[in-house]
Image 1 (spheres, rainbow over the protein chains, first blue to last red):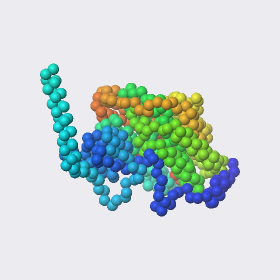
Image 2 (image 1 turned 120 degrees about the vertical axis):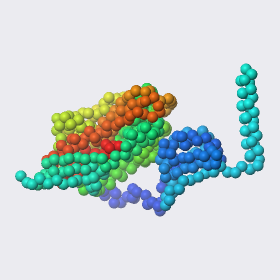
Image 3 (image 1 turned 90 degrees about the vertical axis):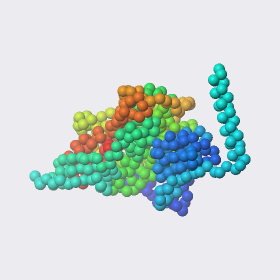
Image 4 (image 1 turned 60 degrees about the vertical axis):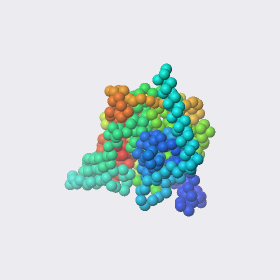
Length: 143
Length: 362
């Protein structure tokens, strides 16, 4: 038994830098894996809805008809399920947290309008796919 | 013999981190009887298995409690793996134990800080929490979360830790040892701490056995009860495991057990990092638990043995999921330790068993 066992550490702390950060003057340094918030690269997104099905908090909504992808950042629990499940890797987890807000608003991302060339290319691709399906069906019916 | 008075204590009290209520029957300054009451933060999480499928329910179990977060996700995953007879890859087992032991370090450091705060040693409190911060940084670096890790899933783990990062973790822990030794000396050899803890809340070995108390509370009374002895998961790979036991049975003993368990956790992490095999970290789990199948699993949480039960019904939603948490086992022992103690010792006494009411009520 004795006393002042913490004296060494206490004296050292008197002359060392603070262990805490001077937030917000000093910006926090995040790790590469820090789970901050989910963002969607809507150009890559195919609106398949896998993320919506995987989300345990029900924070995501995918509307195929309106071509929108919606996230409620205040319901999101940063579990990474959607990012892991995304087949096109259009979802990413940023290290920064959702900025503070006074109103809880969902963030809607809409597919951008296609240029005439892009639309033509998309229609051509769809027509090709439909032709392939029809051919396969005909082959199956014949065989 | 003085007049008996009933004093309500809690659920809101400066020393209590969580809401528990006691009706303290007082005679002069001595507590004659303590009648506990819980139920202030019941959230009905077990019932939620009917709304969330078995794979996304792991995120709910993590949120049962902030301190035992990883332990609960691990316990739940183990139970479902037993239910569906899934074999977990060895690397995942090792990673789980590494995270779980780190959770023990942060939980015990948090408790030691709270204890220091309760007996008025603010400096010690701050130092414990400062050291704990490094463990939280390891969590953030390896999983992305500081408290809720979302690292464990049914069949394995979500993230791998590269071997050099694992060695980095061991270096961080080795770096903590020097400072932790000073804290350890203060807790175990400082006269001011010993005066406040010795003899407070005594529970004999016989009483501990009769009341089935678990965890450091039981080990401080001389019962060598530790589920890790059975070598579940990655614990089977340890060369030797000996639970930390103290025989003093009072607050000092509980402090001693937890303080030494932190060092033990450092050693376990170090040993597993040396032994960890390469390989996959996740086994694909498909289908649903069979109807009428049931499974149980046990886990040594920082607060003691935690028991999980689950039952399937042939769908993706479980029929029943149940947790028996360490604190619900320890409340009976806590009321016994309160009998006969001074009114001024009540807060400290409650704190020494490290109650986690969020877990207890779920």
